[in-house]
Image 1 (cartoon, rainbow, N blue to C red):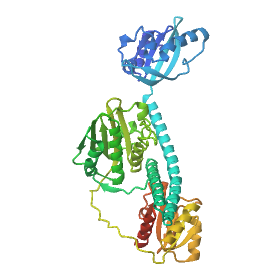
Image 2 (image 1 turned 180 degrees about the vertical axis):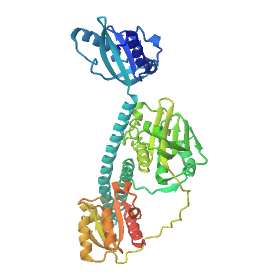
Image 3 (image 1 turned 135 degrees about the vertical axis):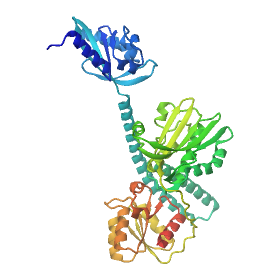
Image 4 (image 1 turned 90 degrees about the vertical axis):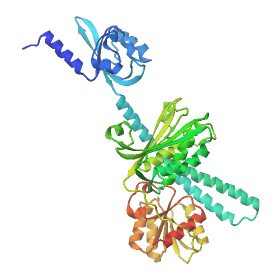
Length: 510
């Protein structure tokens, strides 16, 4: 039985009332005729404030000024901009805030009079997720780039530092020694720079331990008081029952110091700095709103200041390496990027909340560790013993680094063999017989890494000792294999004394 007009109207009204998208109808002049409840909620106006007004009041510029022209152009030429097509535009709420929306428009006629219906879908969540994904991809790409640069640069620094140390032994004049020491200091600065790059790239060699974050913060407060100066009040809010976390304590200290220094610089006229710790549980809904932060239990460290704050454009780039708003010579732009990389490599995350003129809070989330903190044994360093005729096989694909390493080891009194790849090293082991130590780079061409070579050496020659070296190692950052964790690693670039100690410790290892 055909439905009456009244019945159709009731059904249509029910659909409009229950629709989750905003629906607005206008006449040919752009004046609003009807709105549904979803439109009231979305734009934050009561129904009576819609009716009879030009729909362009719901649009910011440039849409506000251009809207009526679009309607006139369509009526006269038939050219469609949105009608029957739909596109992403910007809406404006009653409080003046804007949001992205998808607008679909259709036309209809009643008694020969033209009208238009607009269906508006709020896409704020979708746009934010897309922006977060692009940001995450950009940070990952930058991490790969900076990690690769740091690797190559560390090889160069290894050659520079090593040859300077060899040259030092041949110099006799004081002025020459002074020049050489300045060059060595500059090389050490370069080494610290690459360490920060590797921290951002999540390629640092971490030495995680189970730590009490409260104790670590408390131990730093005296030094921070001196660093911040008298115009900045430092306070702490430490949760008494804070869970432990398994991280590299040196990296945590460095992160806190970097954040405190950044906060100090944001408060040139003084202010307040607050260090807070707490246990926090990230659920699925919060993780969805903060891409990059996985659900789970965390120990949260927050560093808050009452400084100048950051505009959104600065906040969105604050974790990028070399990005800084400080004047030339006052900052490298690596402090926050190092904090971000350390948190991510430790299995956590870092976020920034900031308001201009109010201040900034940086939140560092570190995974909760279930066991209690236990004091480790005190390690007493011993001076390295002189060489006892041991034979060392050096495996390094970079010719300059390999030549330098051979010279250094020979000066220490060791017999040295050399190979430019893992496959060549295995062939040499087969042909030469006894080798006391294999000293190999981690990242090499030829299809076999230093890790894989170490595995083969252990399998074929169980008595041989192994020492790894690297200026960058993707596998080192991500591997949790027990056999890899136990291996000794010497980070490039290194001094002659560090090489001597590392070789000695590797030879003595059980």
